[in-house]
Image (cartoon, rainbow over all chains, first blue to last red; front, side, top):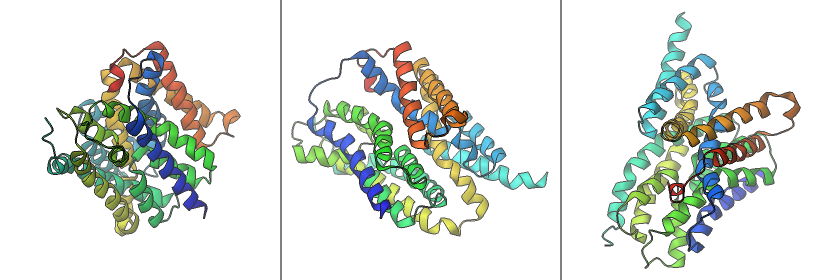
Length: 102
Length: 236
């Protein structure tokens, strides 16, 4: 039952955040500090969500580090979202296959 | 001026849809491991259409967090959509009715925003509907496949797919940090504070959702304070 409440809250909050500004906002934000906070927020959120969680995301640290390094290298080359995601997965997968051989 | 219709939208949305399909596949495999039922995940993806928000949401759900914690987490993580929605209002065709604005807003994601906001000319309602269509199908279908067929995969591959969603986050973080010192600063500040809040025993009473909220807001404030954004720059 609680899962349905979670669903309702998540869908409701996420939709309202998108909808209210698009439907009703008619002017521009000018407060420089607020602009800055909104501008940096997505990166700050993604950063704290990715580190340290990425290092436990495959259940075993060495393959996770391999995936992290692959993502870092392709990210530095500005590859697309899907390329980086698949490269991280492939690096983690190959590492986990090779690892037991040592 | 308003030459873009449903067809053009569909075409622009195809690569996004393909990308979402594989990333949400990985998301679902990860989320099932957190103990969330597959059907719940499909409804979650179909009604939320957001990667970071869903990862954080599932984390809070799996920990049995409070509803207010969940709502605050989603608010902070998805706040960027509000800025994107505001930016898109500047490009909407005057023919957009209020109801059409409300419908189109459902599809505001980082990638859809990036495509729509860089499209030349005004955005029409049919174009926005076309643009959102395939990403929505890809995200929801990928979640279903991951949740229900993910167990058919070899264990090693399914374990490796747990990193896919974080790989996608890295693809946003790294180029952002390369381009702007402020972005790098925001990331470093929030990661550093996040590590302190997670590993210093004094803060062990904080749940994962609140750690994300506090470290992200603080990191963004530090960056906004030390590296102010010039007007207009914040639209990106």
